[in-house]
Amino acid sequence: MADQSTRTSPLTGRHGGSAGVRLTPAAPASRISLRAPEASMAALSTALGLTLPTAPKTSAQSGSRVALWLGPDEWLVIDQDAVDLVAVAAGSGVLHSAADVSHRNIGIIVSGPDVEACLSAGCPQDLSLSAFPVGACSRTLFGKVEIVLSRVEADTFRVECWRSFSEYVFGLLAEASEDAAH
Image (tube, rainbow, N blue to C red; front, side, top):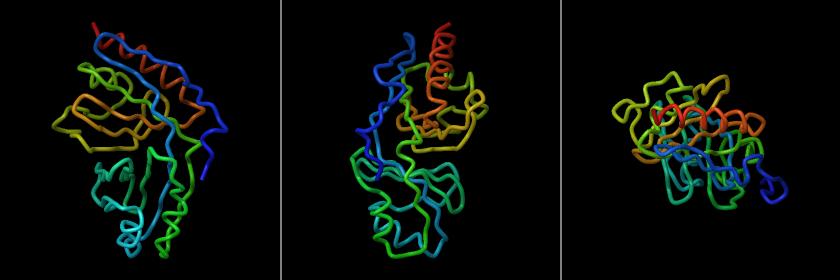
């Protein structure tokens, strides 16, 4: 597991937004990029303590852990606690690939009544509550950057992006939040 205390987030201390949108760097978290065949899903689900989602745009959550469906055999698993997710997945005893991406990714929480307008400034998807309900997730684009977007509440999204793009994404979100206010 990546030691979260050895690396400072490029977004440490950053906050932004407008009257209708709040931007907050997410707390450090453990993350794995998980790939597995269908035959391994039951054992991995048991080991992870949640049922891996199998439908597009869905997620599953148990406590501080969430699994986001990214493809037929691919998930991003995030745990807010300092958990060695690679070891947890290895305990399943079944065929899979689990790469620790805790240092690669940065999370940004985007919330408020104008959140959909803010995110729509850089994301081509329909983010209305009817098309992208609570629990929905998707690998998509924001501006020129690939992100993983998940809706955690009606007016709150989590944006996961690569650390190297986090300042660009945060800045673009800040500009979009100002535009959404008008």
